[in-house]
Image 1 (cartoon, rainbow, N blue to C red):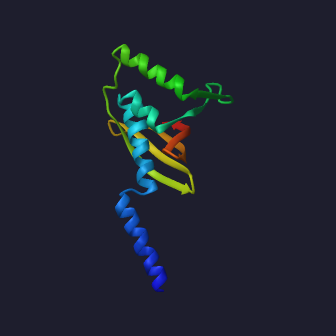
Image 2: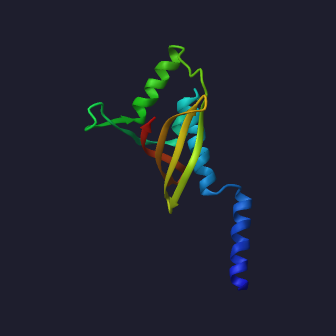
Image 3: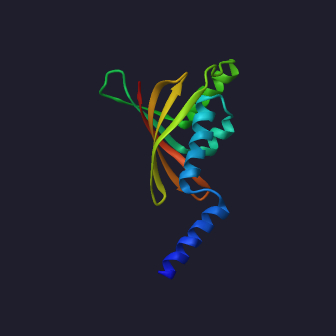
Amino acid sequence: MRKLLLINVLLITTVTLFGQTDEDLIKKTITDSYVIGIHNGGTLDAISKGFHPGFELLGIGQDGNTMTKLPIYNWVENIRQAKEAGKVPSVKTECKFLDIDITGNAAMAKIELLREEKLIFTDYLFLYKFKDGWKIVNKIYFRH
């Protein structure tokens, strides 16, 4: 019993000392790199910090039968061009975290994105924990 109590105290102390759990770090990665970076006109540097270079956004084609793929480097280039053209988001995108499931160094986050309190996307973001932290490696979504 004492060993179990000691382990719990050490675990709580470790989390308190380092300040953030993996769930906290995942939420921060998604918020900083995806919500602020991609959707709310954040910096390209913020985007690159939270996305793995091998990231791909997967979607369903207009025919309802094919898949589309958008690598992060294409997505970032589209954002860069939009910024240069003066096209910045005029309405802030809000994020609601519905679920975060972590197993070892792999995680999945289910989130909702809202604009003006209207649900626009349900996203499923997949992450891996690398030496330099959690990175978004894949996304699928449903457009409402």
